[in-house]
Length: 444
Ligand code: AMP
Ligand code: ZN
Figure (cartoon, helix red, strand yellow):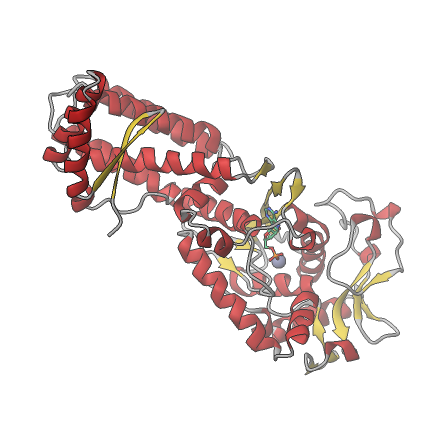
């Protein structure tokens, strides 16, 4: 599996992380289904944007990109994204790119322009346009584009190798192709095939990558090898802000750091970005983030609660609920990662188990079964993590909470308040919300 990684010219925004989280979910689900996954995610550390950025700051390209690469790894960790197996950097794979371009020249598909850059002749590859559904007949063949990003309407011969120009400053490689640097698209063809072979299974990225980036990757790789490049392409839709794609160029973005600095919980951010199907757009809002936080808490609270359960048997009930949720969750996730249905079935299950516990109808062994099932879901979701024994509510605390509930129902505010104080002394904060009583540990 190859996923286009970050262009390390700035801090990634949470739109970018929507892409990386979707890929993380896909990988976790494949592993859950016992596929062996070899995951390669590149770092684009030389392209038009990184060069421009480093020049603005007047520091060497490497120093500039390393700062953002480090930040990316920190952010990915904060979002509990499982690391890829390999993180190739473009600047460390120039020989592979040169050799691929040489093959394309030998095959008569690439040619040198008057500016000494090397271009890909799109009319030499009959399948050009098959991913993004553009028709080669509609294209201005012969016209050339040297920049990395351009619109579908501007499809034309694109640069594989960009001859050095003064605006590139210190950034160039002296190679058999002349003094210059690679185009963005050849980087991903070379790095993916270096680690995964000429044909591999899965390639992901955001929908904005379909054209020109992935279209050009296919053209480069398939023309060079004569083989199918990728078996399955999966593209995630965009995260929006007020209906518009979250993007650096629109200035309408939040980085993960922005949100963490506001006190947002990384688990809630993770859940929010995962909980809309990857092929659907959705708007980022703080209300949405609050709802995501409650969802994560509902799950976490049940897992904590289960640690202290010791009631009577549920009879057949638990087995029924368990087999139903396992089937629903599994079938939905197998269906192109249908998280809407999968997560809904999981939360129905959470509600039903809470009801069993409220009715004292769950034994310790049954609670352990539920706990291990939820743990297996969370290995895919990655929003709860280890719920330690110490974090579980003691029996005494649970009792105080239910006594306080009784007092509140009887409108005995004085007793209720005393019990709240008692709990506070134990480091437990109780809150009365529209959904009922919630508790949390005081941060010390
Ligand atoms: P970049 O660092 O610009 O190369 O982008 C990294 C990944 O984020 C790519 O897969 C992009 O397609 C994806 N991406 C960029 N903007 C968004 C967005 N607003 N929502 C979802 N994915 C995005
Ligand atoms: Zn790429």
